[in-house]
Image (tube, rainbow, N blue to C red; front, top):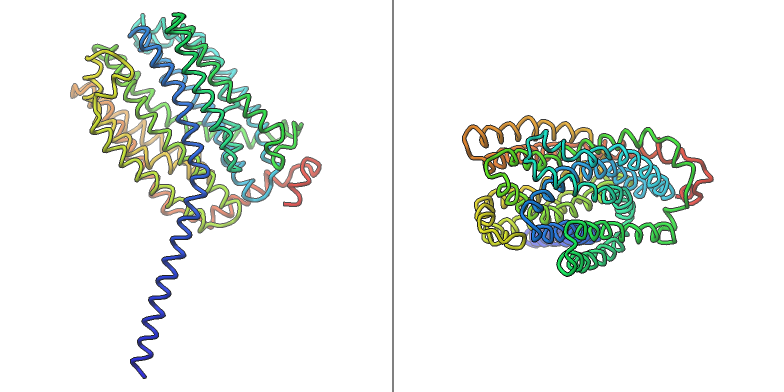
Amino acid sequence: MEGEIKEKLLRGTKETNVDEDVRLKDKVWAETKKMWIVAGPAIFTRFSTFGINLVSQAFVGHIGSIELAAYSLVFTVLLRFANGILLGMASALETLCGQAYGAGQYHMLGIYLQRSWIVLFVCAVLLLPLFFFTTPILMALGQAQDIAEVSGYISLFLIPVTFSFIVSFTCQMFLQAQSKNMIISYLAAISLSIHVFLSWLFTVKYKFGIPGALTSTILAYWIPNLGQLMFVTCGGCRETWKGFSVAAFKDLWPVVKLSLSSGAMVCLELWYNTVLILLTGNMKNAEVSIDALAICLNVNGLEMMISLGFLAAASVRVSNELGRGSSSAAKFSIVVTVLTSFVIGFVLFLLFLFLRGRLAYIFTESEEVAAAVADLSPLLACSILLNSIQPVLSGVAVGAGWQSIVAYVNIACYYLIGIPIGLVLGYFTHMEVKGIWTGMLIGTFVQTIVLIIITWRTDWDKQVALAHHRINKWFVAEPAESSPKGQEA
């Protein structure tokens, strides 16, 4: 009898373990599907968008080495500066729309989209002097005169590109919060195809040079924007877009405050590489160094598009679950997203260690530049590995609304640790570009560890309460007539 009881207990334990394993597998599979619904289109879209810059740089690079260095400088310094500010301020929309959608306050997504347009448009206008005075700014920063002058000419073509970010970033975040971002992928693919053809037509066949390459770039950025606007306003988002409203001009200050903290967080991160290329411009043989570093940063940027896709997924999943009131689901989504991104990053880490300088010939015919790229490849591989974790944790921060906290972390890790160490290694130990990049990788590593600790030690039940406080304070208090649907929810 005792033996039978023991056998039943053992059998019951085994069955319980099997059931738990099955439930865990089902849970992982369900979360993975939700994650990829956002991450898949987001990765493809970012690849396509980054591909626009890559195609432009490739065609400009075959015009001349000075033109390539100038375009690389303007893209990495000026456009990334503007991109960082506008993307950072737009990321407030990820927090607001994600939590509102999770809480069922659908009508508020359209209101916040319009408020974000207002805030970002004012910001873009304030950035215009940077484009008009690019040449003197770069020369004051120690860049070579010939490169600075061509950069100033190129920067004027990038003004329409900067204003395109207003629509692009906000519509993407608005649609991602609802897991409706497949339309963005289709538009991005069409735009990239048109850009490749027009770039060849304008620069190779008709020899229009820089104006031809950059005219194609402008069109490539605005074509998907027009498609997104039509989709949002013409019936693609009936629950969340109720038309233009005067409510968009009310209570702008909470959006401005969250946008500023979001902007600080993202800008401090994106400008990190800007500092790297600016310091490189002050070294010996700056033209080769900038070209080699720009190629490495472009490859790193391509991989970063994967990580940014997972950043978007982490932000949407965390904000949606916090809005719904499920702290356990938010934590589980973080684990699944981070592990998935890390596995992909590790595979790419090994791949780029193997490829080394072969990558350079996509962008240039110079053997000297290719040799410099090969020398930087181990650092590139390490950057790719770190990029598979750190941006995803930043996405968690955006989803939870921690932008101001992460901004302080970025200041400490990047600008008080990474850059000073890079300066010492680059200039005082004569490691030059490798030294600067090594120091900055150390800063990124420290930042990643800090974000892991913050995420691990967070009280997620408290985050649910904070999300609901934000929803009750900012969302429900809107005029009733603005959305009957929102009231029902």
